[in-house]
Image (cartoon, rainbow, N blue to C red; front, side, top):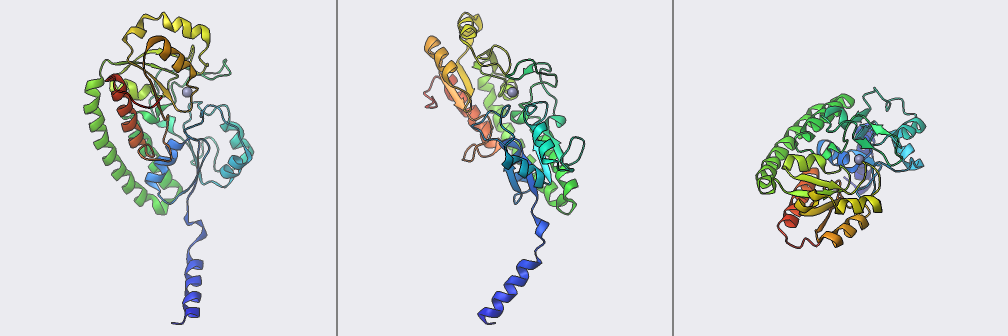
Length: 306
Ligand SMILES: [Zn+2]
């Protein structure tokens, strides 16, 4: 075959690939992008937020509106986590498939048992989210349920991919179960430890590990730590039992650092969700890393994360 003929044959091959082969996905937070990548590795995904952003508060910017408009499915946390920006995004995108009640809008929290209903308030005050703590992506027990529901939904949207998605889910779940057994073993040494936290980001994971939350730097869920609340915290007798202060990398470290100076407690900063880099680029890797950082902090070793 001459070069020219080979080139013509190649062009024909390219033209034969259907244009709609790639699933277009919009996600509100990077944890759902990680999950989609495990189930549909070649999906084209646009993620609205990064681990360096507070997912409660972002702008419905034009590039995100455009991404929702062309997406086949949007995957978000729900339970009012995105109440401040997602409704406007969906309205402006006006994608008929991505609306409440349609298969094209998937909320992870709809497939989870949320902790502490009425306990989640956003920064503008007033908005009490009755559904409970939405930060469910770090729940070792609930994530497989969410992933299973997502696999089913993706299979409904792309029936010809359903069998492949289901088999990837089964493999993902096997890997998750092995990791969870490892975390369970490591949790034994963490039982009864106590941490100061900021917001309920890590609540599901800490509770699962048997780690207490001695105090919260936030005066109320979603309210920034203020001077008067911090000085009250100093007098809180539960602080005596705490072995570290745990915050997420998107949060302002100053309140934690102030309390660290007053108390001598170490500050542990970990990503609140997956990042683009190993070892925290998957949800399993992220949980392993958070546990490792907590282990280091409670054992009194320098963790180098401040
Ligand atoms: Zn929150």
